[in-house]
Image (cartoon, rainbow, N blue to C red; front, side, top):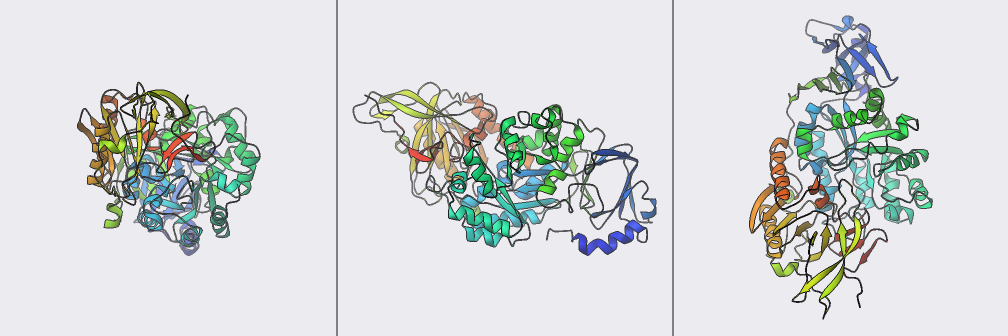
Length: 599
């Protein structure tokens, strides 16, 4: 059971006594306008009484609940809205631990998160998931964990540090903070009846929990129908109105995301605002938010504001970030609304459109005032095994990054990963490239990409080409955040610097290193699994800002280019990716050759 709060059933006698006026409440909030997401109406003057972390009385007059020690909060005409819920997200994407992520989002009004720690699962396996789960359970807000389903995300196409089995999933379903199965990215496996994927889904459904979806294919015909039949109950991979409609018509929840690099709300919310579909089947989420976004722009409050800016009724947008999310995960009687018995998660705001987050209450406790957190977010004691995860096996040199051309060639036609700004999918491009001393060279906007194995110290380096970043001059950038297998991705125009950047991350235990003209110009240290820092978000954001500036200094003009860099090994999203096993054609789900046949 989550820390600091007991069940409604256990608290019912006390809540009844408070609501009846026999026992005073701990807190009363009065003088505001209650936003009822159950009925989608604003109830002017309604008051709220809180006891033992839950709402006891919700109605027109809570004066009978006031005692000598009751804290009375004057809303002064502000709106009372439920605490915001993020329906799908990865804490590791913020480069923060659960504690520091919570500390960053609490002032923005997020009081519940449904998190999938499949990033750390790829590095540390079930032990890593347990560490994330345990730190999440220590926090003053609700952080539910979805057991990762796909490590590796595409068996046979990549090698992870650890693999998640159906037995692991079944074991995790008994943990107190596990709410369901993380996004089922191996959609071809489900469609083709893969026994392990179906066993993971069965273990989740038999536990009465929710199966997360991830259908990254444009085909909405028979394959999509087969995938939905397998059990996934939601999907956040839609990018167009037709995607949202297809999902909700087959009984899924359409999760529309606005993250640091995902802008999929505006293109899908027209299913509600223009087509008039039932909004209770739509959920807002972030998926991936970097620390700088959290510090500078917000979290779920940012998503709700954006939905409103896209023409959504503010009350409907709030439903999509509160009660819809809670209901989807079977928690409508626990959170997501301001109603008796629910966890006392609530925000006071003076405007429903611009949504300033002025006072945040979680589990009946004030946790933030005017953008400042007022509680502690406890840290887990991360062991050495979680802090020593970059194993290169050797010191790399420029030779490790050479791409040897076929004998006798002066030029080659190479397959090139094409980065698309603000989108997860890549393009499968080709380019005619020169060969010098038997080695294929990038030119123009085409530079080199390498995946360096870092889990088993094999010393292996898989090389290829990528375009779209706009890099110029001599540079290199390495990152141990490399969804989903989280080896090391190195992109550069100079092989010696690519080696230097990779070796640097081996020395510091992971993170991001940017080099220009032979000198390191930015470093973000991520010592926990090579994915996270246990420093505060504002510090991580400052280092990340320096990294972004360094990328720009190397010629990169893409919005959120780092996110694109970190996704280059994501072998479940089309069209072309790189893994430790080679170049991956994600349309055909097979390894493909780097060079095309030439005369």
